[in-house]
Image 1 (cartoon, rainbow, N blue to C red):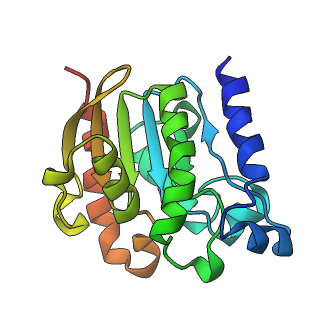
Image 2 (image 1 turned 90 degrees about the vertical axis):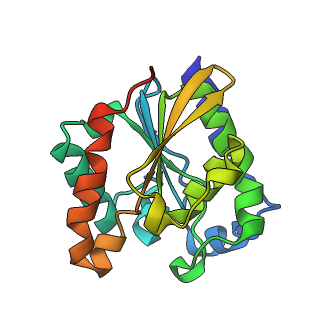
Length: 198
């Protein structure tokens, strides 16, 4: 059932000609990156948009940032196959630039559907764009802070299927450009061991 519903999302994104990134995807022979992992995941990780490796394979977080994510998960005793990993924007923006508000707007509803299908208890946002989007989605606009202050914090929210915890994390890519942030990421990931629905 969940598989069929998630496949429907993939089929819709494949032909999303209204997207400003559709033409770029077709011209480069890229794939949309929908998400992967357990369809019954307790934790869902949401990044920003796919990079080149991801767009070439159709798999989220399979490049350098993905290796860091895998290491961070291992560090807190979580197996990647037990979580679900996706992005807000499902197609690669040109030159790995940040996603535009219009792109987040067009792809956001697909992410909303993924959350409804998988029903995670914990939504871990990776980076400021997914943090901002998810906080607004769950009516936590007033609690939004810069990611430099929010990282490592958890927030209580209410989904259609029950309570959910939102955990704000830096995007693993920050550790590629600044190795000093790796320790912060490791510390922040520790919250995933303790965060549970009360």
